[in-house]
Length: 316
Image 1 (tube, helix red, strand yellow):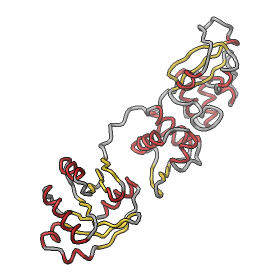
Image 2 (tube, one colour; image 1 turned 45 degrees about the vertical axis):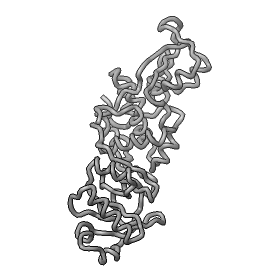
Image 3 (spheres, one colour; image 1 turned 180 degrees about the vertical axis):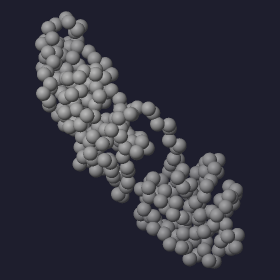
């Protein structure tokens, strides 16, 4: 029964206590031979888990559930490798069951059918939201749980969950559970984690526009060489560079101009990012996203200052 209990705990957050059901000794032979039985308790509710020992037909599964339930006075959850057609029939008749690593239907515990889908193949590069989660983890070694991550980044719970699953499948983080909380473990050495993820990281900048420099543009965080200059020995560019997420760009009133229409000192280059430039929770763009926005230019001055920033020949 260990796989049954582990599945409910690891995938659904249900902590099940169990012991051998004494009533199994008085069952008719056809019931005692076809399954083994545990008396289970979860959140104050008790039920019998019947682990079917061999392949059984739908009528046989229904008979186990109904007859053991009648004798025990409790609901019976069938634990077996049940095909999709059988699972659908059991759900329609509200007969509880657990298919370890695939699906659980436990209406007495308030759980509807929840199927585990085969994961989609990993993409070559991280989705923007997944990269946003990763750079936030790199920038904030103190983040320990998904709750911490959501508070820091403002990313919804569903997106955080998908991102952590993707990162876990790539071996970049490890997940565990404490109650219903997801605990995140990873290499807190910033450079080591960047090296591990380097092959799947993407350029965060998806578009560049130019605008008249004004009070609105000054509210955007510095980006590109302007941001690097603020934290290194690099001289700042004549034309200021700032970053905005797609949503922030849409909601701001900016006076767009053509490159060269105004003096460089009167113009600001605005990088539109695929995720929030401040997703790591600070008032400036995080170091990793900044580096990714700059390395493709292959400017030796910039690469040198980035490597100084990371205290290692990390960017080429």
